[in-house]
Amino acid sequence: MTTRPHIVILGAGYGGLCAAYRLQKKLQPGQAMITLVDRNGYHVNKISLHEVALGNALSQDISYDLVPVVRQPHARVLKAEVLSIDRKNQLVHTSEEDLAYDYLVIALGFVPETFGIQGMAENAFQIENLAQSEAIARHIEDCFRRYAFADAADRDPLDLAILVGGSGFTGTELLGEIGDRVPLLCKKYGIDQSLVSIRCVSADHQFLPMFSPKEAQEVMDYLVSCGISFYMDAMIHEATPKSFRFKDENGDHEFKANTLIWTGGVSGSPLMKETFGDAVKRGRLIVNSDLTAPGYDNIYVLGDCAAFISKGKDRPEPTTAQIATQMGYHAADNIVRTILRRPRHAFVYHYRGTVCSLGARHGLADLKGRTVKGFLAMRLKLFIESVTDYKVSGLYNAIKHTRLFKLFNF
Image 1 (cartoon, rainbow, N blue to C red):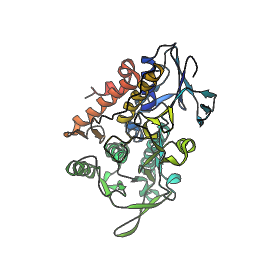
Image 2: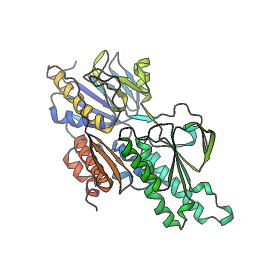
Image 3: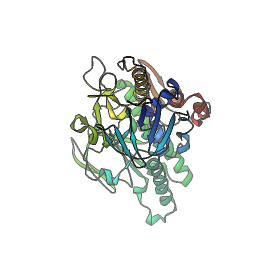
Image 4: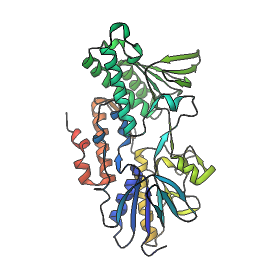
């Protein structure tokens, strides 16, 4: 190890940025150098991408530049693509430069997982980043505009049809945004809302299993009241340019639409498989209790790339922003402990609850057994997002960020 160890952090999502922010506060310039590598150079509140995907929020509402956050003399941001990791020689190869590290934090986020469904990656929109979310918003508005301005004989009813694959958390929140946006588009373009078709096709048997059956049913009933139809226990086997083909207990079906959106799953960065081989499943590596990679006490794996199994459990914890921020803080603290020649601590995940937004005016929150519904739940989620901004980037940035002010915009 060099006199001044180099800490390299890959990815500026919740886990990576939390680690960078914490390390800046815990270490003095003479104790370490910190390099945060990110392809974009800005942080995105990815739990809000579904809002941008329907035009209910702007990209700048949920993103901010990294430089004001990583601003200490011993820290820098490198805008670059991570190409590969050489564990033996402790090198990270990027599109801009090679980085030698003493400590490495891998927090490279997720990519959509299509589970080998034919045509899904090519034909359906997926919510991975700002560019994709903005493209969905433009596409849906273009479809409604095209329908409104076409001659009656030339109107394509599929322009008013939206298909969503998957009814998980992201899919449900997206449907909530669709339920908000469609009435506005119909009013804007003079379209009869009864002509709009919104359908969700999901392989899941149980809807929103993180909530009680009663609460999940209330969410579904609300979305149905917004004009959304659900088809559960339905396995999509092909996505064509204008349809989902699926099978359920009643046989084979095909639903057609000019807007197809897939929210059925994610996996960790493909770089995980390239780096750690067969130990990685769906882009996730089972980490040690202190969040280090097996066999490498100087490599930490966080967020969507990590499979962390809490004591007494047999399955990894779900990958959420909540656990990623806690991981970021803990990894940073363990790195500091190692530099100061102190023992590392085991990570303990503290579950705070779950909040599901359903557009701008409705939501559902389960705060460890206490339920909050409706408008208050949605406002609670905005408050939590502001608290998360504080955790990953500090008080100044949280106050400056527009999401905090939106909280009080009643």
